[in-house]
Length: 210
Ligand code: 2DT
Ligand code: MG
Image: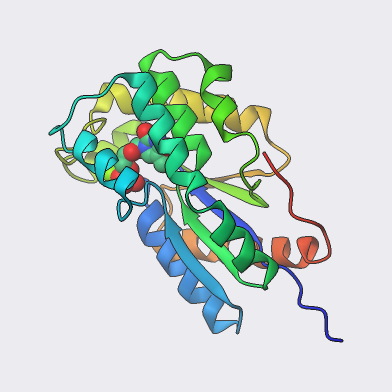
């Protein structure tokens, strides 16, 4: 019997405007041209009931306490865990725009406890690699106005960046810093090369949990 090798869980993290959305789509397309099965995902996934509550919160049309919205973001990931596992086991790699680390970074930036924030993520699928798209906040601001959603403010983004830096330091085994000030082409090239290496390294390793 031909054994189907599992896919890899690849996550892109970083502040708003760091290029995650464009790069995660470009990376999906680039891996596709190598003949790999790959699916793009984004959290929060606003298509579910929980996602629509999150959307209302982000658009400032609904107020929730910091703890409640934190747990909803996490629940939104739990909604997809079975589907993600099934795809990975069937050999499809996932390129995911934001994951548990955005969950922790944005809530800790508001003042919530780090360990408390991490707790509901335990048991979710562990990424094989996290690409941290990093650029000075000044650069991100210069890319144009932040939008009108909650959190899209310079001072807040600096706090988020500090938490991402802390997580990156603690989880260096599978975090990779990508200099997001480089051209779109160069960033994509870095991501593509590193992802192909990781796919090769991980193909015989089991999936892990956070
Ligand atoms: P997008 O602009 O990428 O749609 O994100 N966020 C995201 C959290 O606070 N916690 C989470 O768990 C996740 C996934 C980051 C919308 C905002 O939601 C924040 C920005
Ligand atoms: Mg946004």
